[in-house]
Length: 199
Image (tube, rainbow, N blue to C red):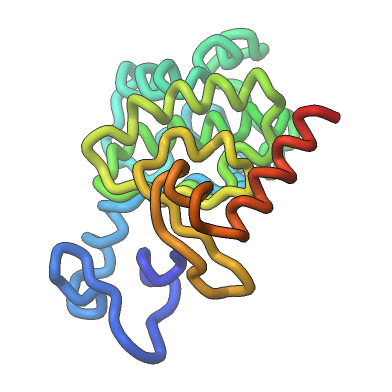
């Protein structure tokens, strides 16, 4: 998925979006269409407000607050010493992992991208934060192309199509039910997940 925002170029073949080879489109305009939330959330030693607004020129305070509300971040932000004007510290060190991921999600929601990349986007969240992020995502992904990378099978409840990778190759593509019926690597993942739940 690093090819999609053109962090690097393909050494063979091509990546097409709506029939257009990404190497032929304007890089800035392409990246304006993409939102990314990763497991390693990038926050700056600045205010919560500026971290959410980063990358969205001319964002208004009401838009930033609405994005934070949709990401279920507004409440914890108001509990910070200076609310939205609280500085998060170097790489967001004053916040928990789940809080940082909700701020990154608010940033993506504010951008309103047509393509959304979620890479282990709840990996640093506790169970409560993860449940809130899932609620936010169910609404937000409607009407946009979303790529979701995860090892947590319950995260896949928001996916219409699942691609199973095994040793760097595509093992199968389908719905949860189809993959349970026909894909051995997916069946093994489901069994391991069920065992963790029972432990």
